[in-house]
Image 1 (cartoon, rainbow over the protein chains, first blue to last red):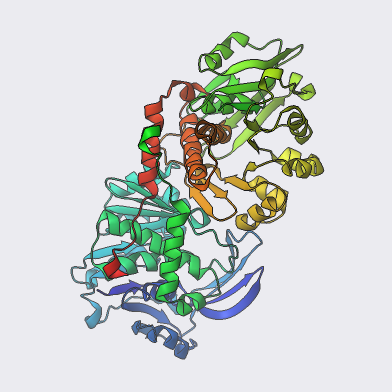
Image 2 (image 1 turned 120 degrees about the vertical axis):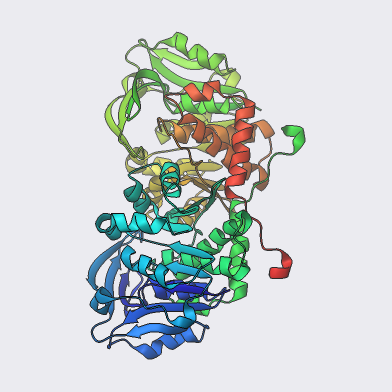
Length: 307
Length: 307
């Protein structure tokens, strides 16, 4: 089954302690699509400006990503420029130029409207709601958001949550949205407002998934060399939704594996600039890291005689 | 097999968003002993002042903890006063009065010197080294430390590490000690200097254990109500070493379970002030939470047909 993602398609300029890259492929839609394309066929909706090096999106089409929903508008492309200091934990935004993205009104092409899995990447909740008006009975709707929308579009976001199956957000956003510092309470607050499942991403500290009956946790993979953290969260979402879409089943066992696939893809994303690493890995690399995740958390209970 | 712990025996006054408690039993030795006593017999060495409510240590002896190594010295007891704000993540120290602890010279009673498991809680590395001169061929030596000693007693600490099997410390301390922000690299740096195993505690974000061949991770238990985080790290150490001592085997499988028992005991410690919760739990509470930890991280790989 395929996945529709609506999000930003940007040009990122990033500086880390290990190097510098200008105008690389970036944006939540791009990272999500590159990551999910390892699992399923992906349909990307977004907008770029007239200055966008459109031929470079061929890297996506080669992976089977349908970019016919990426609109080209007159004006500048969305550009983000950021820097990571030595600890790599938080990006310092040096410049954000929304360009054509500030007038983005997603138009879902007719041939995409029946896509069973829909991911609303981090854009204005009003536009996320608008996308839901355009799609037809998706099997699963998941969305992300950010501090800016929680602050400025709170009521729209709460409206959106009523129509969302899974909310993915980071711990700071969960606390800001719910005004609860305890993440278990924050998750419950969110689940009372629509989503059946909540995934709270904690960056290098892993991710919690809350389902009606259980809590699941997956660590972030302890990499020795984190090169560029940009896009890790969207790559997580791509692995998570991509895997669910590949399997077509949304039960507890698949959701748990989906979180681990999400962590796996996030761990690959940070190994190189932009989507470079996501584009070069193969199925066997993913399978290998999934196994490593299993070994990372595996422990057995004491044999019965010691109980 | 029994455990010898050398550490502080203090009086804590703590304020959290949920309440306030004055002059409660505290200190690294106390928390460790209370936690480890759920697994094994514990011998506590420390010092208290003439003002210490010594009869309250009966709570420890009732648990089988041998306090004959707790010296009573003339002067004031070690007192710590702290406050936690709403997020409970970091203590604000309002007052530290070392009292008799500032002249503490641990004397290991003759009947304790052959204890097979030794835990050097967070005290001056020179004293930790001195304890190792007094004990006879322990099977396992583990230790903790803190930012103050890393800063002021670096060379003693490095000397100590040569004689230690397991170092337990938190992530900030690991980074400070090794000057490496990446924890995998930090752990390797430490393991090159003596300890065969390193446990890096990340508070609410769980704990990593590094062994020569593998990395293991256990999350902190996602509690809905964290009441008072004081002593969580020492309670972790108590569960970790207490379990190893109970089993008498130090292999990968036991070490992994030991980390989970450590997390389990840390999660109980924070449910009430002081060691109150540690003293009331029973074996079945521990077993139940250990099972919950198993469910928290459990996922299965895809069935082979999907591989």
